[in-house]
Every structure is written in C-alpha cells, then in structure tokens.
Image (cartoon, rainbow, N blue to C red):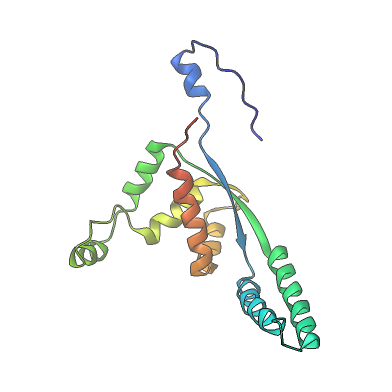
Length: 172
C-alpha cells in the first residue's frame, strides 16, 4: 500500500512535478490456457452429476478431483505482470510511431467507422513493452518472442490492461 504524506499548502511547480506517480496495474496472466479452458467444462459436468435426483457420486468425485487438478494447474501457471502508465508525451510519440496502415484506414472507411488512431498489431506490443515493469524481459527480442506465443485471450488481457492503466483517470 502506498503511504500518503501530507501535501504542504504551497509547493513549487518543480516539487509538484517530482511527486507525480503514474498509475500501475498488476495483471495476472494464466499461461496454461488448456487447463483454464478445461475448468469450465468440468464445473458444468460436476454440476450435472451433483443435481438432486442424480445418483452418480463416484463419477462426481472423479470429476471433482480432475477439477481440483485443473485449478491447481491454472494457479501454478499464473504470472503477475506489473504495468505502469507512461507519460502522455511518450504515449503520443508511441502512437505516432505506429500509425494505422492504409488497409486499416480503408477498412474503417468502408464500414463507416472513424479512422484508427494507430495500428493495433504493432502498437499493442509496443505499449505493453513500454509499460512493463515486472517481469522484465532480457531484451526486445525476448519480449517479441513472448508476445508472439500468446493466445488471443492472453494478448487481449495484457493489451486491455495496458490501455486501462494508460487511460486511468485518477480522482481523489
């Protein structure tokens, strides 16, 4: 928990700037997507086997054991990623470095949508990488290799968290 200190009545602008803390977010990412997907099916099956009037306790016990194993596998495969918003200027610079492609712009226009502000295929990993505090990849190549291995759901989880922390409005 962050310790808050009393703010003196009058601060210089430099003192104010020195106190700025950008928002952070911890995102748990499940690496064992197969076990995570298995949980829903096992929960459904267990529910059917334990309904009133269903006499299948042995099967229910076996399914409950498999469900426990799947939940353990998911917990064991969870990794916490700490993201911190980057400065507004850095965010705008990053957006400019990853403009929407001509094809993305044409597709948006053909659907009657606004022109995309950036190319999500290149901007998403760039923003996550820029915000990532922990765990820290050894280098850019290691991060790109990691990003390429993510499923759509895993990628979406990190990307959504990166946008959320970047655009988070802090209020008293």
